[in-house]
Image (cartoon, rainbow, N blue to C red):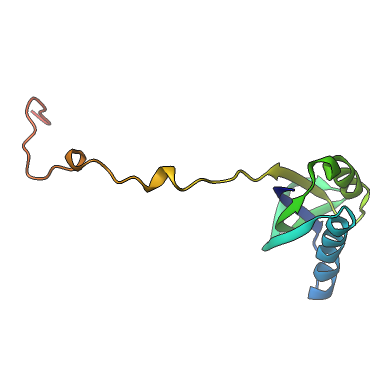
Length: 123
């Protein structure tokens, strides 16, 4: 299983019930393809740069999910066929290794009180 992130644009609807139904459609499609939703971040209502399926505003939601790589193409096809989704993009979420960044800076990197020579500012 790989970790993916998707930004999904739903048509904007008044009321919370419509948005909940739309998000459930996306999550059901993931479950249908044997995936698992890890995180959901609701970005909210935003104007679109151009009309998409006659909508001028969209409701943006970011999903982080796990899915088998061999299921990705079928998953994308299911999203394209879903009428509740205006547009989407999916990227592979990279694995971050923090062990490389744990090294401390060398002690000579920060020197205070040292006067720089050869650099002049102004006249």
